Amino acid sequence: MKNIVILISGRGSNMQALLEARLPCNIAAVISNRADAEGLNIAQAHGIHTAVIAHRDYADRGSFDAALAKTIDRYNPDIVVLAGFMRILTPGFVEHYRGRLINIHPSLLPAYSGLDTHARALHDGVKIHGCTVHFVTADLDHGPIIIQAAVPVARDDTEQTLAARVLREEHRIYPQAVRWLCTDQIELGGQGRVILKCRKQIGTALISPGLE
Ligand code: NHR
Ligand code: GAR
Image 1 (cartoon, helix red, strand yellow):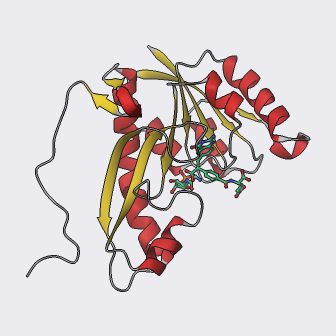
Image 2 (cartoon, protein in one colour; image 1 turned 90 degrees about the horizontal axis):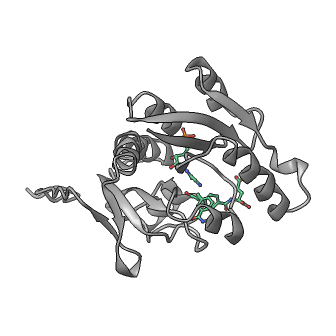
Image 3 (cartoon, rainbow, N blue to C red; image 1 turned 60 degrees about the horizontal axis):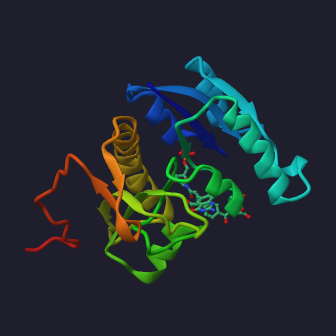
């Protein structure tokens, strides 16, 4: 079974979804860059090893990433999963985990990379928003896409209601993506595109607002 290390910075609801998905892997550790991340308590309640590597204790991004990698590598990970991890990683770190480092991002990439995705989507008046699981590359939020979920934006949405609708879908697609990786069903094709060996295709379109 593959070893997985999960990196968090806060609440840890995506991490919790992964812990509760009964994935065919060994979740070896959960590591946070913040000592007060609520997700650490959830991981401990599941009997998972936790560690804190506080970015504030390091002079620069390079030395933080080196310390982080040293701790991660103690667990011999086959896959490293960013779950609400909020520090941009240096090219050296990303290269070290090439093909085994993934992230979930709260938008339909390549739209709204970076921060404050829900506020920006509302500001632009888009009618469809969502979330994306992708391989992490040095190009922030632009690595090869594994899976996406789309949700409608409602007329009276606030940042909070929209975030909650997207988060529900995050909790569905992240366990699926990790399951595909655990069972070697994902291939990295040419032009940085992800190929699913057991290709499933949905047959429905999300139209928002709906047709009458
Ligand atoms: N690192 C690389 N190299 N490539 C990616 O695609 C990455 C990454 C690190 C994190 C997650 C990403 C997201 O899903 C992620 C993808 C943090 C920031 C950010 O600006 C941006 C994108 C993401 C995560 N962080 C600030 C920083 O200075 C700190 C913000 C804070 O602490 O609140 O690192 O959105
Ligand atoms: C999630 O919505 C995740 O997509 C997003 O932060 C939230 C973390 O929630 N990630 C980013 O914005 C990465 N920059 P969680 O801690 O409850 O999983």
